[in-house]
Image 1 (spheres, one colour):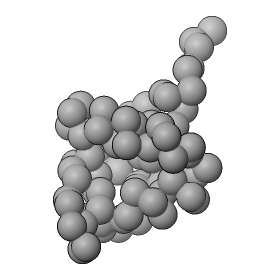
Image 2 (tube, one colour):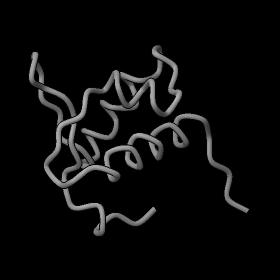
Image 3 (spheres, rainbow, N blue to C red):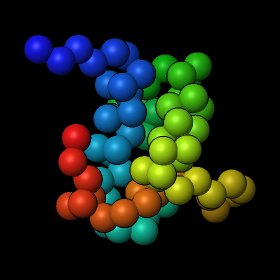
Image 4 (cartoon, one colour):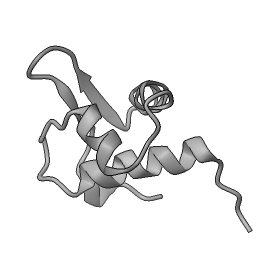
Length: 77
């Protein structure tokens, strides 16, 4: 049996939330955090880790947000 730690669970939640939207759609990390019940203290660390891993792209600023780096059909968990 594979054990999934809390941060991995939250990372899956971020990917799942982004996969529900059309490709190249930027979503606010705050919106994802609230929708997927991710603690505010862990959210930046999770997003940064996913960006470093190449799973998501981040965009700063007022019109920024995060989006999947590839199409959701190409992601396998």
